[in-house]
Length: 175
Ligand SMILES: CNc1ncnc2c1ncn2[C@@H]1O[C@H](COP(=O)(O)OP(=O)(O)OP(=O)(O)O)[C@@H](O)[C@H]1O
Image (cartoon, rainbow, N blue to C red):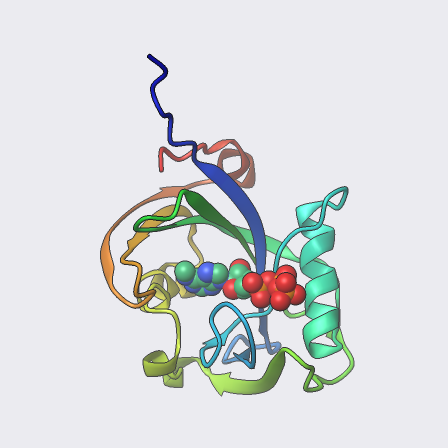
């Protein structure tokens, strides 16, 4: 008898948080369509085949906000698992303050600068409230978040801090 094997597949995504020069403000976009619609988030999307994750992050920021960015710094790899969905979302998180141009509204995102202490958590992915303190304290981390199918309830999470980029890249978190 052949046993059914439930395969877990990973889909690669990018996420960029753009900060102003003294890190007091962060640029978010209100997602106007698709996954995460109605929520404020950093800029990003799916990595295309043949493209590096870094280049995908730069491309998505440009497409969604018209900003050109340089010197992205990798800060985290996060895994998101939704109940009843075998696809795990791998989000590679970057920050930068090195941008040129002004943010412009796109088909997908309405950009707006927020003061860091004043983020609209009621209208963001609920995981943000958990990992933002790690990011804002300058930590590098990996984390896995478990969601119900409602995309709103987090049933649990685990995380670990790493001390170097090399360690971050090497971290294969058991999701
Ligand atoms: C579950 N908890 C989460 N918390 C915070 N951020 C999350 C997230 N889950 C996904 N994200 C980010 O949301 C964007 C979706 O991107 P998404 O619009 O689907 O991709 P892309 O722009 O390629 O889509 P189109 O196919 O062009 O519509 C992308 O930045 C991705 O990193």
